[in-house]
Amino acid sequence: MAGPVTHSTAEWLVDRAKDSLKQDKFYEAKSWLLTAKTLYPRNFYIQHEAYNIERNARRVKEAADLFCEMFEQFPDESPLWKDIFHIIGALENDKPDVKGEFLKDMFNCLPEHVQREALLQASGRCKDCIEKCCVMLLLLRRFPDAIPKNGVIII
Image 1 (tube, one colour):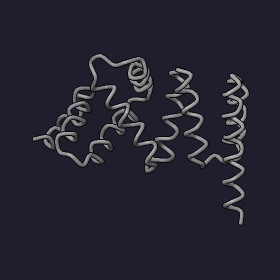
Image 2: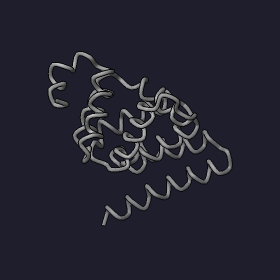
Image 3: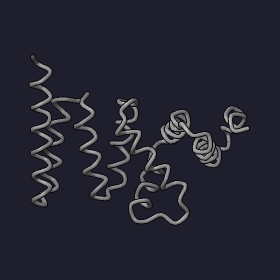
C-alpha cells in the first residue's frame, strides 16, 4: 500500500512545482522539488522534473549537476536516454539553435567520466550501424585516449 501513496504524494509535489512555474515563481517551484527530492531521493520522476526546470530556465551548471545525478542513479530510464540522444544531436550539429547550444554547454559542464560513459553507453544503445559509428566518432574526437580501446569497434 505504501507504493501508490508514495507515488501519488511525489506527483502531488511535482504538480505543486509545475503550478508555481506557471505563476513565474521559479524559486517556489525549486522549493517544492527540493522537498520532493528530500522525501523521495530515489524517484526518477522527481529528479527528471527538477532537471527539466533547470534546463528550461537555461541554468547550465544546475542542469548539468542534476543530469549527472540522474545518469549515475538512474542509468536505465528511457526519458534519460531520450535526453542523451538530444544532447548527442546538439553535439553533432555544427550550427545548433539556442536549445542545442545550451545542451552543448551543459554537456561540457559534466565531469569527463560522465561525458565519456554517456557517449559510450549511447553507442551501445544505437540500433543503426551508421548511428553507432557517428556516436563512436564523437566519443573518439572528444576523448582521443579512447582510440586504442574503442577505435577498433568502428572498423
